Length: 342
Figure 1 (cartoon, rainbow, N blue to C red):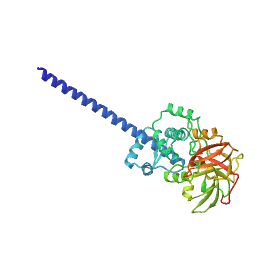
Figure 2 (tube, one colour):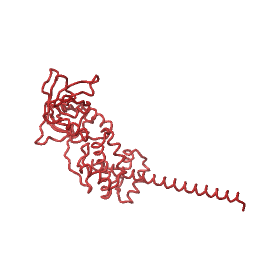
Figure 3 (cartoon, helix red, strand yellow):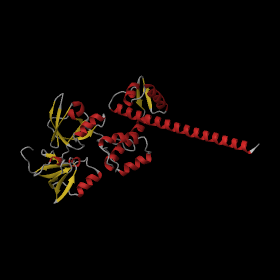
Figure 4 (cartoon, rainbow, N blue to C red):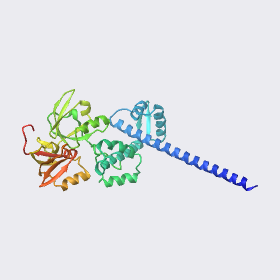
């Protein structure tokens, strides 16, 4: 056989080997991607089934398809697979978690809430982004990574929305929340939980700077509107929005400050005394304020205002410090000099 023919055969073999390798790699990648999608969907369904059970509702194929925005045929296919894996069981037209399925669901919920806590404590992500980012990460962390994350955060019991974080064993701290519409009129309380779904309602609540731990009092309530006072400001909500906020009574050692306001409301020529820093002020921001001497009992006043009044420079212990309004909202004060309009 002449050299040209040999070279041609070798070249053809190399092409064939290359094609086979590419085909194998592509097939493996497709199978891996499909497995990941099925894992993610399984975990999303388990989490949804857990929430449905907690709200004392019943789960159906149609309900899961609507909640997860997927085809009913796909839900049915997944339910069959999850039944074979002993994660769910069906009774007539309803779907229920097995004990194994519940444990798996709690692991996903634990990961989600721990990651939200991490985002709140250790990053600069906005509250409106926490849920979306945690939805992605909850499917990626291993058991060891989840444990390490929990240890890093000090094994917290609650996430930044006030939801209890399941322990490694699946135990959950009990809560006794009262939905805001059902809370007694003119009775001081504090925000213990803010539901982050649906996102549109959560955004409305965030826009009014309603925060976990904020002291509130309902001053008006009827079937169309609920008006509350929260840290010196009155806010109006429809009952359907207010139902996403949960309240608990104040502890015996907590005092409802009738004159409490946010630092951002302080005007020139006014002086105030710091009452405290909101629990929503976390991590580096909280440490910075404490390092600057913003402590309970400290006197504070406006020093300089920028043209757009954001940031504003405040005088604290003979030092001028500039704070954005978003951060000043997290500092509670009691005004010592009030003008006629305050």
